[in-house]
Length: 95
Image (cartoon, rainbow, N blue to C red; front, side, top):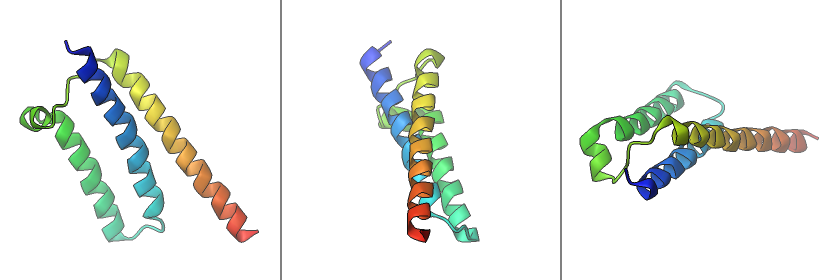
């Protein structure tokens, strides 16, 4: 296994989870076309990681749960920070 390749793919997972949540926040208030945009985006992310020829073309590596779970948790923490900042900004704008 290529540890460097796994680490770079896990880092991409962190960035994608956080960036996807930025898209979720920016899409508010939701309309049908924004929900389609979010769905297509999520589907594309799943597609690039699960279809072997696409993963190979993008130089993505299989990541074990020992590295994937922390990457997902860090990505979720980034998403929580984005959400918290959105709520804090919303509160400041209304004040």
